[in-house]
Picture 1 (cartoon, rainbow, N blue to C red):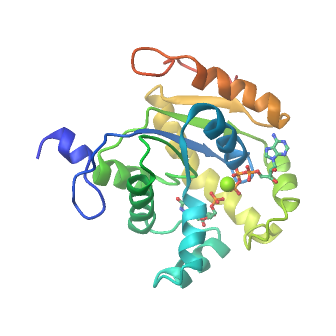
Picture 2 (picture 1 turned 180 degrees about the vertical axis):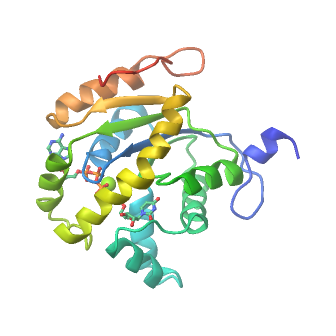
Amino acid sequence: MGTVEAANKDANGSILEKNPTVVFVLGGPGSGKGTQCANIVQNFGYTHLSAGDLLRAEIKSGSENGTMIQNMIKEGKIVPSEVTIKLLQRAIKESGNDKFLIDGFPRNEENRAAFEKVTGIEPAFVLYFDCPEEEMERRLLSRNQGREDDNIETIRKRFKVFLDSSLPVINYYDAKGKVRKIAAARPIEEVFESVKEIFGQKNEKGFKWFMAEKAV
Ligand SMILES: Nc1ncnc2c1ncn2[C@@H]1O[C@H](COP(=O)(O)OP(=O)(O)OP(=O)(O)O)[C@@H](O)[C@H]1O
Ligand SMILES: O=c1ccn([C@@H]2O[C@H](COP(=O)(O)O)[C@@H](O)[C@H]2O)c(=O)[nH]1
Ligand SMILES: [Mg+2]
């Protein structure tokens, strides 16, 4: 099978009709990924796929994996790649869109390599919300959305997993010149102004390609 076909294989091994544009949206817990994705959707026509939301929906659906996923989330651990990738592929296929913000995935090196291998999709770029832990902790403790992992014990575990497993993925893409770093400890509107600069300017591939060494 050629590269293009391999690039479009879905969870069942069938060929996806489109070769989608994917932006990975990464950052620590509470850095504002979901908040900013909602703004990007409204302004730039992307479909927002939060891996965490898909996993929480899978728990609610009564799936055979529900209990395992729930236990992993309570412990701040990373769910096996094959589970998350299947959910993402299904959501991509069902959306009818060809532009996606994949929020909170890949979370470790294994997620990253498995997603690229199974789907053949490389991200157009990685949007990285850079935020100090104290600020993220304050936000998570006052989020009030009833999430079982928004308690101080699990939050600390999630911070450790982010540092140990997720930052290396961001560093991997940074070495490829694909990371667009945003200073996230600012008011929501100000953060979105920086996000708009990244999405708003296009080259022939549809994006402004540049090295963002400093946070914008
Ligand atoms: N720039 C900001 N300033 C202050 N509060 C913010 C900002 N951005 C988001 N918040 C608030 O912080 C909380 C966490 O934001 P959000 O859910 O977008 O983060 P997240 O990165 O998706 O977190 P998680 O990884 O836990 O899903 C929410 O209550 C949100 O309203
Ligand atoms: O790719 C993923 C995404 C999420 N998880 C688990 O879900 C929780 C919550 O994720 P949010 O992005 O904060 O909504 C996360 O701590 C992991 O336990 C995952 O395993 N893989
Ligand atoms: Mg979120």
